[in-house]
Image (cartoon, rainbow, N blue to C red):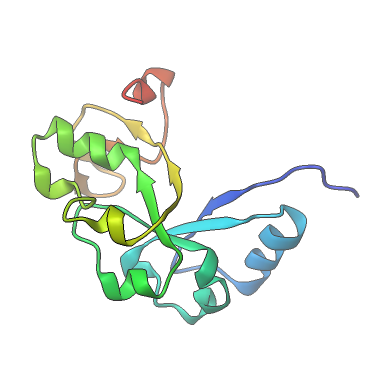
Length: 140
């Protein structure tokens, strides 16, 4: 069966990914970029792909030792919006000249829901991985 679909960017999972998944993304779907949270990059399964893996901004400062081993930055705009809504500059990990030192290779948006506690992820904030209504990306 011929595949005509491409998935150019994949958000990686850390605990349960296997080599066959990378092979599928690379060969079947022609994936060119990956992103992951910095605390999840240390698995050896990611080693062959580090030149294509971008580290996502989160709710903490970047570890430049991690960035030095990867392709650069992935901007998650929902995390930036979360910091703006909460009026908390500590949530903006893109401060301190990090953008001058590392390239942005990809980005993504997620839902922003104004209920502050995310029971599914057990975090306090408004950024969500699931979208219930299109209006949850109006911040873009």
